[in-house]
Length: 356
Image (cartoon, rainbow, N blue to C red; front, side, top):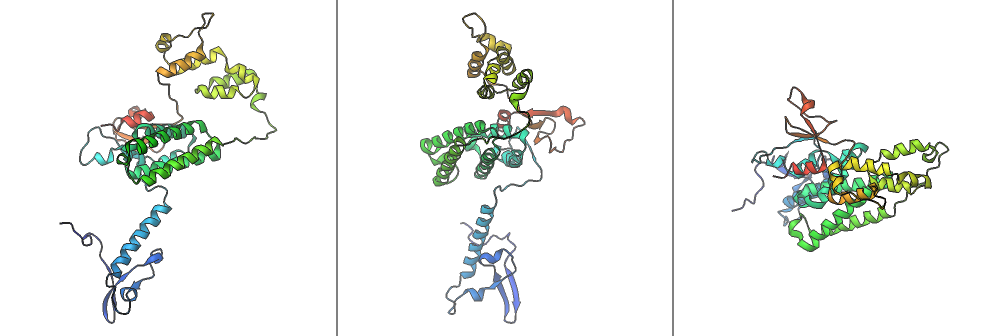
């Protein structure tokens, strides 16, 4: 038989001694904010004392209002002091709740990580991988935190114009996944009401429209511009790029950069950076003069092999303590040589750590 009474672990009612005896006091409405004004149960009843349950109803109402007010005013429900988490290979009753992907997602403070330019691309790539395959494995609270942080990411791109192409790809993958889950498979695989997910889909479409209409402001400067640099220096800057699309986009700026972006040695260096020699020897693309077309070979290789990932800062895993953490935040390591126990974790490796 279900227990319908008040939870016995609660602190109990609030009583006040009066001349007529002890009377219970309750909080009502917006007066919860200061907790100073108390209303007696007698004042909440009518003159004929017909509404005998008004005290209980008022308390339930105020509890719900207080909870709704907290949820509406709080973007993220999680504010953990320790920005690290134990990762255990074996699942036990005591530790399983702290080894899930959703728990790690909430504890590692991605909301603050996106403000760091070195970690922004890392978090965006991780969000893209979660959107593709791991969205249904997140709990309801973790899904809410996911979309709250995603809103901050989109807002940062719109305000600071940083790497919009990566966020466009993220939103496209997320939109495709949500459409297939809501329309193709139904709500049984998602946590929450259908209307909530339809509103989220509508929000994603709105973000995509804003990113499509994003225009970079022209910066008026009387100093030295990129085009004023010597050709040798411009060429060295191009060699620092690890993304082929960035090289192509930069080459469309001026005729000089167009010539530099088509440099055969530049694309050869890019192929050697992302792929092994064994890989591009198997897929040689030759021109009519029997020379290797390195640019065409790069786009051929990326269809069959994953590209090398490069980030300014990543999460780290301590092999001695089995702890996942941001390196700047640290963790309580018990090893005598902590530096030799650290291992950088890629976004895909992060997801693989929580696959049991």
